[in-house]
Amino acid sequence: MSAWGTGSFDNDGALDFLADYREGTAAVVETVLRDIANLDDGTYIEADAGQAAMVAGEVIAACHDNPSEALDEDMLADLQTHRAAVVENLDLIDYAVTAIPKVLASETSEVAEFWENASPEDAEKFQNNAADLLTRLGDIV
Picture 1 (spheres, rainbow, N blue to C red):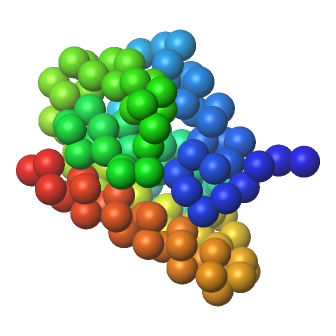
Picture 2: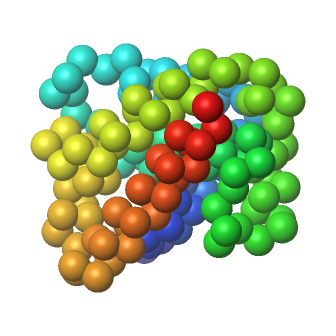
């Protein structure tokens, strides 16, 4: 059974992406966000890509000293694994603020569809977490 929850790190796809980031380079953050940001309108986004985009956004926010208050020290350290490379690449912020709203669009996103069919309480928690992430990303610039 796969894990699925309202936070950016509460599902298997997100944790898989986080492992790829920790073990790889900051390029995985750019790739997932750029690919989604550059999708044509109406292109469907699978759950794994959508979950990865949310985590990539969290990586950017954390590396720019604007992490979620819900993070513990170990998770924050994981998100800042490639801090210098993330901070150096300012395009990542633009990719994130373009990609994440696409992940939240129910017509074209498996992640959004899931939350549309979830309990109202869980859907609200997810939306609040996503809004918080977008606010924190917007505060960087």
